[in-house]
Length: 333
Figure 1 (tube, rainbow, N blue to C red):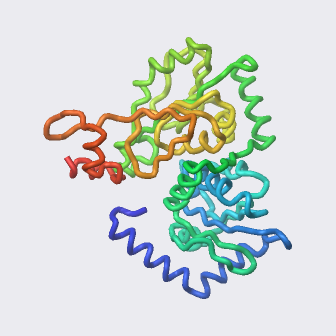
Figure 2: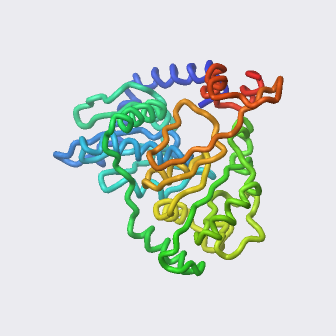
Figure 3: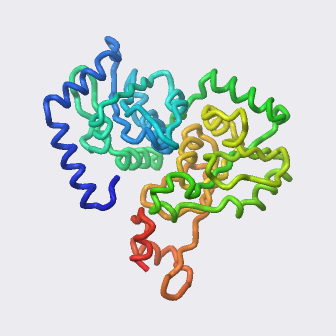
């Protein structure tokens, strides 16, 4: 959220105070009431980070699974969305029961960082839950055998996607892989995320083996990354294609044979559609929840003092899965 735990706590205190104000609740009701329908059980959820692909896919997917059986409508309140991580097509996919409402108000979206449970506000229920809490609750649901409810691909996106596959010359019924490797061309100002990144040039052997096995490969990402060069036509550098649209990120994630990706936003989109994934270059993190068809391959952790690879037990003993900033790895040796 912010640069330090102290600043995070100060922000949360300010948000709790804001939530308690009469004018804040009035803004919330004025935002929601036009989208209520008589007789329909309605849950309202505040999605704080709509500018991040992973959260825009992950949180509605988890809500659909956790609350879909219990409500007729789920209203998602978000900011207006902008920047490299915003994809407006994703929120067309959770399902017909979802209603997306954006607001220019700077405060309401921030309330999505608060934890307060499900509140009965008479006209509707408000799910006040941070992303961390939603991940935790979904994890408990899945690991105890609960049903999973996936995203649904809208017809308009399907049609656009199939037209694109025809445009690039991919034969009908050919299986394909979606590939994504995050690098620092995405959000370069957030240097503390460098430890999550990878170099797409080191993926060459994997890409060529996919092609040899009969797959096409569609690389997702942003135009600022290292381009894919010297590959056959079966390898498409999607963000650089002249007919690229963000809708294609959604279509390809929904229809791929599997994904070959890492810990960055597009992995959540693939997961929301129930597609299997080999997720590589991973760091250990407390909130990682693999789906049943996932294969996870982790980075090596080295001791700065000896250069030796740490065992899994040593990684846990040092508390490294709780680290979310690159500089903290150095501080922990």
